[in-house]
Amino acid sequence: MPAGAPLFPSPGFASVGGTQTRTTDGWPTTVHDNRASTQPIITDLLTTTAGPDHSTPHAFGGHPTAGGQTNSGVWKVYGRSTVGINRGYADGHVEQSPPGQILWQHQGASACTQFY
Image 1: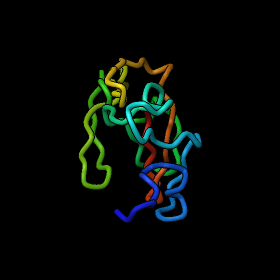
Image 2: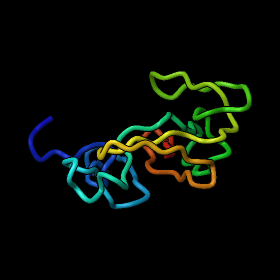
Image 3: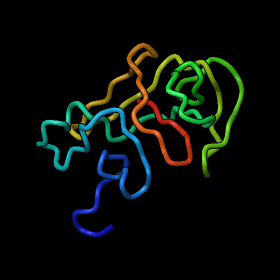
Image 4: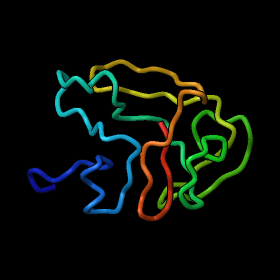
């Protein structure tokens, strides 16, 4: 990746790949960045694939309680009706988040929406 290129899925990536983000927070750049404790850098996959669907109950993945599967690009995602996801942060902490705390975060040009 060229120096200065936006990191996916930061708001700056919209001009490159058509990604829309819910916030303008961007990614932490070091473990000492203020966002290191508030912006997850890794999560369980939770996604919708039917257009700009920002509804968590429609998503596949996470810690599912019901069956079903969908394809999201190269990934096959199993299960619906999540009871939560794990979110990992650059400062080293991990938290489990119930459905009421999970929000859509970015929507790709291919119309899949990711949640965390």
